[in-house]
Amino acid sequence: MSEEQLIFKRSKALTDAYFHYCPGCTHGIAHRLIAEVIEEMDIQDKTIGVCPVGCSVLAYNYFDVDIHEASHGRAPAVATGIRRTLPQDRYVFTYQGDGDLASIGMAEIVHAANRGEKITVVFINNAIYGMTGGQMAPTTLPGMRTTTSPYGRDTALCGHPIRMCELLNTLVEPVFVARGAVTTPKYINRAKKLLRQAFELQHTGFTFVELLSTCPTGWGLTPENSVAWLERNMVPFFPLSVFREPAAMPAAATKYAPDLKVKDDAKA
Amino acid sequence: MNRIVIDEDRCKACGLCIPACNRDLLALAAKLNAKGYHPISIHDMDECTACAMCAIVCPEVTIFVYKQAKLKKAG
Image (cartoon, rainbow over all chains, first blue to last red; front, top):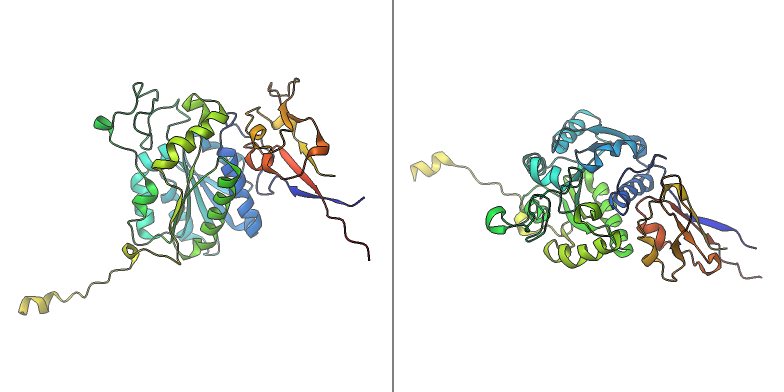
């Protein structure tokens, strides 16, 4: 009889607390992936997380690392302070939802990215405000029914959803911008690779990972149907891709240093 | 032996692991756990290949997977 080997276990970077998330909510998968990346890189003692406001407001109960709570949307600003004051070997990440990051925190995330803060932002996009009862978020799909858009999102009134990855990809400073999903095993394993890459590149610049996530309660679907709904409706609008990585920086990301000769210009 | 261990009290009966299992070994149990959900259970452990697909999709990290080490060839 040969020995058996434990090939899948609860990560050491997760506490023993039970998640408070609804059944089928994929926040738990995102938590597990981040914890596994922290454990595999052996950085548990020098990682600092910043929690948002939203369903994951209690994430400090679940990660066995130092966690700071931020005001609604201000996690990148808090992470900036942590990054700039502590020794540079620390790893700082924020964990934010779409109502937190894309709505009230839009200024903070865009400017943190534009300054090239050396942090990792994990953005959980489930196209709805989950904690407050399923209201319309900036990422809600056109025609999608929520409690504040009972006839579906009217694009004439509210515009189209914001694609954060594409938006941040127009800036010069970010070094890694990617979008994954946490629904099927294939996507989950890919998402873990994206997170690992983001954490490894963190000390070179701003890294951003968006994860498409389900909200069965807010969407009014069963967990299994929400997975299918996400793939059918969200993936076409939010394409899963690596938008920027150091090996393939787009032309838009080349640093522009103008030759400023104002006086000479005036003479000529 | 390839097997999984289910931490039943963590399970919230979302059922995401049921379609993830390629061999249809998982189902919700008739009993209730401490949270009042019907926890997931495996009905034929001998068929399990320890592919860990159920554990990968589990949002509550309830499933532990043990894989049998490969037998070394004699000599």
